Image (cartoon, rainbow, N blue to C red; front, side, top):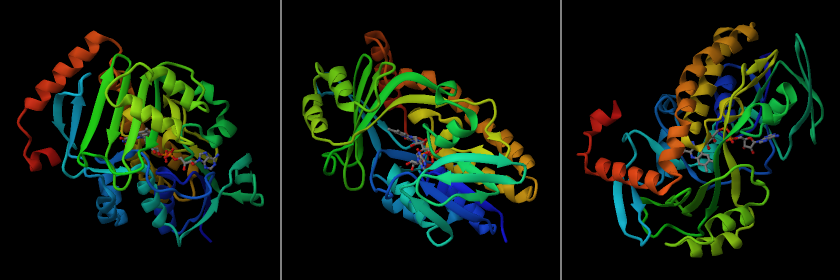
Length: 370
Ligand SMILES: Cc1cc2nc3c(=O)[nH]c(=O)nc-3n(C[C@H](O)[C@H](O)[C@H](O)COP(=O)(O)OP(=O)(O)OC[C@H]3O[C@@H](n4cnc5c(N)ncnc54)[C@H](O)[C@@H]3O)c2cc1C
């Protein structure tokens, strides 16, 4: 009988890991707090090291079918005029896809090979050198050889195994709220960005419903009270903001969180390890989905090549994947400054840079791919 692994979280990292471990004969159980895997959501990128992982999983055609049609970013000025129009994505091999569609496609790859416990969560874990005894909110208690926390920024596995989240989660000074717009974007191939100092509103086309995002500076707002926080932050803004705030008032559960980075001195303790945002969230500014998929593949490869020695496998996974994460986390402050400049001067400088970039000749496709 293969080793038994419990993966908490069926987002991006969880199902990717489940796919690769199931192929190696592991018995995989995925526990997901949500009652169903939803479609739609804010678009994320699959690129760089995640592309070969997706290709070897055989899902690239599905990802391309579900990809957004966005080919450019338009930076809008206060009166609705265009400041700059920048081509995207960075490489023509990249795929931009609604996050939940990516999760659904990844989940589909393990539908027949992993046990899925929906609407449930781990409540307690006790480990000894041979395994981990786990209790759930709903399912019966079980013992596993390994538990993987792929349960995102506010990971339950991390809290149970390593301690309260305040020790590991550092806000980068921004909040983000997203909501569906109920229909396709007026311009189906352009992401619209409207900034004032300390605030950004974006409208992002997606297959089906377009998404709006409010990203604004501030710390410590209650993530369970999105309406009040966003309306307070944007009540004096122009362009299409009043219409978007009206829509927000009628949106039951917009996504809302503090943009944060996660750092831990080690990702594993005994037979419990962390993966994806739970281990090393780079926030929405740093290729989180791409890193989640490549981390899952690295972990599965290490567990396969060090079969029978989980400690060695977990050390190798961490050493390899940290090399990708560290530079991304270092760039977060710069990325936040570019996306949401805090002052008029910062915004003018950013917009000047955007105009200069827009004037650069497009790179040939082959060069862009490399
Ligand atoms: C607004 C926004 C925009 C973003 N844009 C980009 C982008 O453009 N490019 C990019 O690469 N990344 C982007 N990201 C980041 C990206 O979405 C994440 O980095 C990525 O989803 C991380 O994958 P994950 O599997 O680690 O965690 P998640 O995708 O967060 O999945 C975690 C899963 O665990 C589940 N879960 C939570 N708690 C429990 C529990 N107690 N028990 C069981 N299950 C649980 C959740 O329901 C979820 O399904 C963006 C994120 C946000 C919020």
